[in-house]
Image (cartoon, rainbow, N blue to C red; front, top):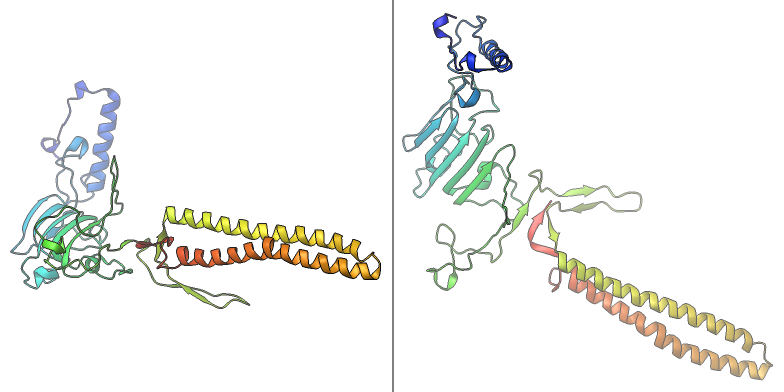
Length: 342
């Protein structure tokens, strides 16, 4: 490359020898990668190594923008103000000519995973683009991002925000809340309260929150075994509610205490009865019969008071425990009705 086209970014006299060496190695490596060492005769001149915020050379794709879109881009980073458009110009509500389908699309790395050639003309791709924040006034947000319908099903023809990247983090220094349903302080909606984005009624007072790991909620089957029948169960289940679960375990502990106490009383009374019976049968025949009868009557009464009564109380408590904690209509049902997870 001619000497006039070489770019000297730093004053060598002001750099230490070590910095000079590192900088020269980086320049050489860039030349080899971009073909500026003579191996690629069509390579473009190196405007910058990219070091210290300088603009590096990288392959570019061209966005196939629609007439209604206002596109701002720098390199392969785009902000598109337009209509709902998940892929090509004919896609989404924007492609159908719908009104009220305005959208803001923030995307970096168009077609990053598809390795499109330099200068290729591309559309939106919610799968191949590197990272995106998509905001639309009217869209099929679940379908466009390929999200499993879960328990709540696909949300269609509603406003939506989708965030997708290799890694997504939400950080709140003093807390993070994930909330569904109406606002508690909305005004101007009358007795019905806040509506959805189309002015329609929000059907559920507490819409579901679903945490779907792996984007799959299909039911699973357990083969069973020699004596067990096959079992099918849902992978998307309600999370356990902490306080209700604690109360359920505390109530169950009390039931077990009553059963254990009944068993202890039974063993104790039976031991006393056996010892008394051994002494009674050693008496002469008339006295032995009377003694055995008296012992049996007394032991029966004690069994009724100390064993059978607490035992049936424990049985009744166990039935109420199941109703209160294990049935969906129970007032302390341990499974959340509104938060589901896999």
